[in-house]
Amino acid sequence: MLPDSRRTRVLWSVSLALNISLLLLPFIFKFDGKPHADWQQFLGRFHPLAVHLPIGLLVLLPILEVMGGSRHSLREAAEFVLGLCFACCLGAAALGYLLAFGSGDAGAGVTRHMWGGIALTFCVLFCVLARRAWLAGDAPWVYPGLLASVLVLLTWTADQGGALTHGSNYLTQYMPASIKRLTGLGAAGRAPSAGSFYVRHIDTVFETNCVACHGEGKVKGGLRLDSYDALMKGGKDGAVIVAGQPDKSLLVVRVTLPTDHKQFMPAEGKPPLRPEEINWLKAWIEQGASPTATQLAGVFIREEMPDLPLQPVGDYSAFMDDIHRMAEGQGAKLVSVSSKPADGLILNTVDVAASFGDTQLAQFNKYAPFIVEAELGRAAVTDASFATLSRFTHLRSLHLEGTAVTGDGLEKLASLSQLSYINLSSTRVTKAAAAQLDSLKSLRHVYLYNTPAQPESAGNLVQPVARNTP
Image (tube, rainbow, N blue to C red):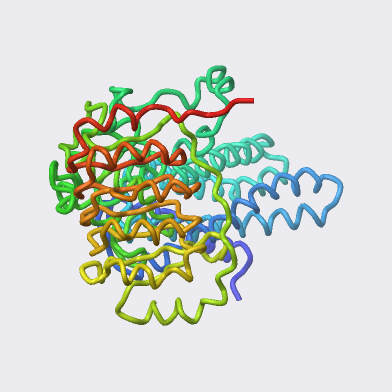
């Protein structure tokens, strides 16, 4: 067995070699914004789990050192905890590098977080080296000073990691306006033209759902969505917006893929964009993807009207066998909004739209109280469908784009107190029929693009909804 002094030198040599290897990683395997091996991503995804152990130990360490002044056993425990901290920092930093390199993450925030982790690991190693001298009474302020530096560096590095996961405005997004003014935090939008459709809707969608992975701090796939110029520039796969052609725009393709698809966006388990957000994006691209246009033709949004509180639907568990059979079959399907039955069902006809008409829709009458969204775009339904749809008492979103409806009978939907979204684009809805939409007081989002009603219907639809005040 090696003597203690020699064993100590061997341990330090190995530790220093490992730290230097960690330091060289960014120079040997540079972040290029491209995904790499799956095994790297698999191991790297343990980083968020592993990183919490050294954080907890580093917070515990100064407590043990302070309390150890009167209890020798605690000071011995502090030595063990410090050594464990170093090992955990080394492992967490290596896993973090695998995560970023394997998944193709890049950007200033990723780089800052990486160097923060490497610097923290070196500082912890220096603490281990300085601690024995401190206990012996030599250089009494070196170890405490290093330990204080470790805590400051830990806080900064953890904040950089949090920004990568939740976005740079995670702490300030809902900060009260008075505190924002006082501190100067969370101020200023990035876009130059405050009144444009892009700023009010498209940029807001990106800010809420996308910039955590495609912003200044983190740039997956070389794509940034935190400014109009960066959006139009595209990423490693080329342009993501093709003005006038939403179906050929890679961004639209990715956000409309099945949620379990490898290329679905937003990735990493984040919730998909809402139907109205996807339609804002499609309509904006179809009409030229302008950064300055204040309104899109045939797209009307009652911005003064807040979102209605969602009413829970009833328990549809008695129909679960039917729902499962639909999922396995070739026809229209009912899809649960979430694991909570109270969130309702979505009627999905995308795969059978050409053969799904009024008769087929009527067969869903028994599920009517539980359906909150009806996706009937490009289906074979006609105006006769409004009689059936009027029984969908919890309907919130209705897609009828690309159908043969003219709007005759739209007034039958007036009883749907939860209906806030309707898409009638590329239909034969007339001006007279569109006028009936003003009687649907819950409507907030209306799409009449490429319809006979488009040119002159905006005047009424964009007016604030009248409300009774106490």
